[in-house]
Amino acid sequence: MSTLVNAASRDALAASELQLLQATDGAGPAEITGLAEELFGVAALLRGESTLRRALADAATPAESRQGLVRELLTDHLGTRAMPVVTEAVGVRWSYPSDLVHGLERLARIALLVQAERAGRLDAVEDELFRLGRIIGGQPELERLLSDPTADATGKGAVIQQLVGGRVEDVTERLVRQLVEQSSGQHLSEGLEELAELSAKRRERSVAHVRSAIPLSDEQQQRLASTLQRIYARPIAVHLEVDPQIGGGLVIRVGEEIIDGSTSGRLQALRRDLSD
Image (cartoon, rainbow, N blue to C red; front, top):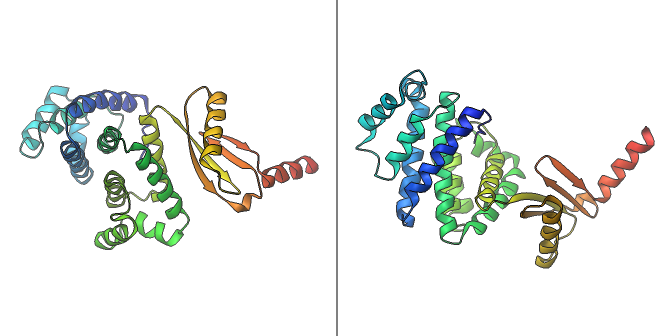
């Protein structure tokens, strides 16, 4: 996945997301799934057609002309829910043509997360994405295979089927498959972590990545989340990873901030102090 860092593209994404939420209003699960697949399809089309991609993202061309081109080319291919989202996306200003593609992919992912949220399964999807990211990140050969854009698509699909087929939420499996199919060379574990962050954002929560030397009970995790919520003054979702190598205690990362209360962390700090 790609993060939209330029202000113009962030504004464009925000405007398009409002249209997306309108498009999902009153939609059933199958309709939202169809909407997401159509958005993924348009993103894939633009990724492969550089001339069309540049034409639809050209801010020098009036928005109405760009939107008219979309209707001319895609009316027979997009449903009544997807078309307004795509026309909104091409009608706003993106910093780069590639940002339009990334924006459409992000909108498709948000649509699937909306589906999970309305079904009361967003927590499960978030947890599965996080765990899969850790599992794949811990197997370098597997990650290289699934992250390689030149690897055989059928072979990668078979690996994904073996890994997650029937074992995770349908939304989780769709998100994972799309990440693998549209791989741009980014590590799959990083993409999965970004998706977990995106799902947490759907619930207006921050994510605390916690490493603990031993497993924590549900009660301990709830107390930790409550403590972090008081510290950061906002809801915090705890993602726990058991890592005996830290020696004891906890290592907590929230965004760019790291709270290191582990034995190994304290030893490293002591060594730094002694060497000064």
